[in-house]
Image 1 (tube, rainbow, N blue to C red):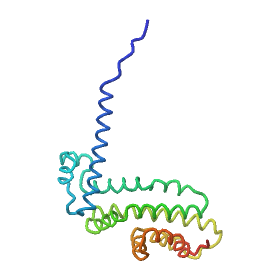
Image 2: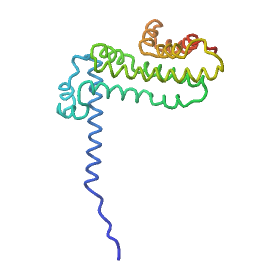
Image 3: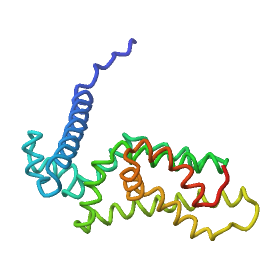
Image 4: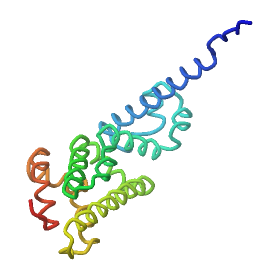
Length: 211
């Protein structure tokens, strides 16, 4: 007896469309948040303003992100992904110390360069909003942890006692790859391109490494 084929599920199709629409709404909200943040700053960024801009209800934004801080954290995560920060996973799996160090510096320089003006705003917000400041500090701790792994790989390559303690060198590398240092260097050099050119030598000399 022939088996009757079932018709495609309209419910599954509808669910897929709803999920697609949900993703688009979320993306639109984050795009509007970024634009408002750059143009008008933190005080003007409210859930009500985002709702009006995106043509959705305030509750919709709350359902996606919870609070304004939640919107900012999601925006920062998206910026990191769009700027290639996911490449850090590959960098940290490298076995050659020099390649790991170069990749570490390059990933952060690229991230800071692509989002310099926005990240200035973000760090300003972190200074006045304790909850968001804690989220940024957590990211800084992750960068410091990664810097420590890079230093450990370099010390393994040396095969001798390091010129400074692991903690000191990790703190140095973490500081040199911070946005604050990159931004100040770019300001002093007159361009982000000049800062990027200088960064590898600055890091090597600070860690007492030879080219």
